[in-house]
Length: 164
Image (tube, rainbow, N blue to C red; front, side, top):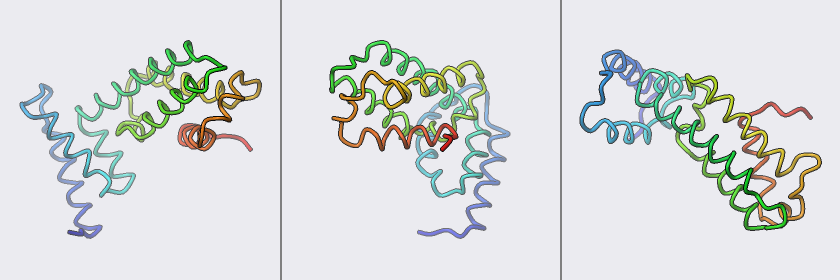
């Protein structure tokens, strides 16, 4: 079933109204409700998605949790990467793909924990630089991983303004 832009806008307004009344304590079934709602967000414009995610505490918590966990995981992977091991490089590339495809990735700017957001961005930048930056120690292994360059470039472009 298709919905018009006006109908979608009305649903968004109703959701934002519901967010104002959403309890601070998690009611029974909250996780299921927000898992289902997250799967429907694509129906809204980007601005409406940002509004809905920013309005609901459970979404905000999910975004912050994703930012914190990803920063930690990226830092751990950077510490353990073996420049001569293609599998090690492939694991980092796969991790970046997983992070980028996560629900919260498009909303990371809404994380209220500035330190966590900074740690995530710093870890992401360090990871991108380690994989394809000037002086990278994994160049040979990185080149051997199919589509690695495209994955890392796309990930970086979604997070950073990259000078040409």
